[in-house]
Length: 392
Image 1 (cartoon, rainbow, N blue to C red):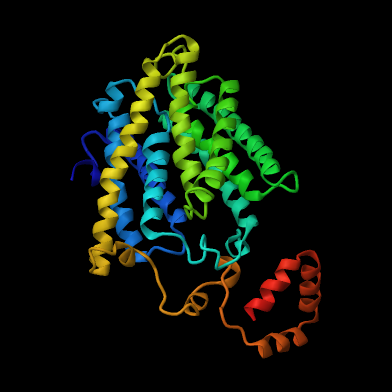
Image 2: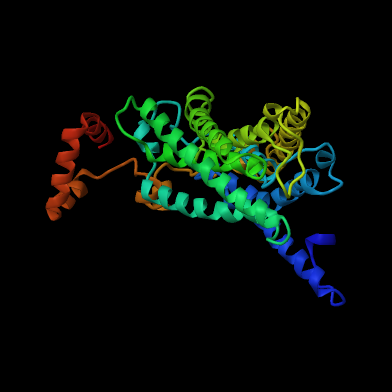
């Protein structure tokens, strides 16, 4: 089984310790690449199918990780620089998400006009921002940890990476805020734009954080943030009708592609502790840029070749119908009323299709504050009353 099932070398415990450190760190990268898909197919894919995918995705990731980081990896030999997993983790996970969404399809009523847009609004901006805070802090470990130590020149790489990572996130957050103002015509700032903007900045910092100046990192993060927000809403949602509840494709696949590409533009060979050619903006010509573009194309091609047949075969096995793999992948309920009973209405923003008006009236009589809240909401949103009347 090789390094997939490690064992301790009692004759050289130090080498075993170093190997275990690399093992657990890379395991976290593999898990991250796998879990990106979970948000993209939320509320649609069967749990058993996702569990099978999770095991398979680790194998898919391992090939790309070897290409990029192993001394004899074919992309590494060609000079590709991807410091903290923009390609193996984020681009791969993001494009796998794109393929998964295509196979399972959108949520019911998402794009056919049978349900109002508010049914698909984010249910908890508080949880979104809390999750962002956790990721934001963890990204220091994600990027700085890729130096694999603090001895010799590694501490120079780690500290430089930390500053670049924070600057990228700041640039992404600023652009996410500005994008939100533009998208809402200066009406308000949407929390998910801030989340995707900052994540876009962080993700674009993963390939670049060790080889660029701090001010360049802010520029890279700003572009990463705005492309994540714009592609998620304007391209994938409105034009391609891609139902991606968490914006995984734009934030991970697109922002990561930009970060990988940015190495070919901004890379500086004078930094200690890394080996990289100068990018286009530092007089290095197109050689590094070409290598980075090769990484993007190779990962997208590998994802398509490895994941497309996986979802098709698993879907056919579960559905027993070669013409309908979606039926085997997708979580379906025979009756529309079944879904709300198996989910938390507040968390999943779901509702029952048939409401007993007597129960509603009785509930309002028992809770006077509820009546005040409903009345106030109707005054602020006239469409809400129309929806309630139609629903009842």
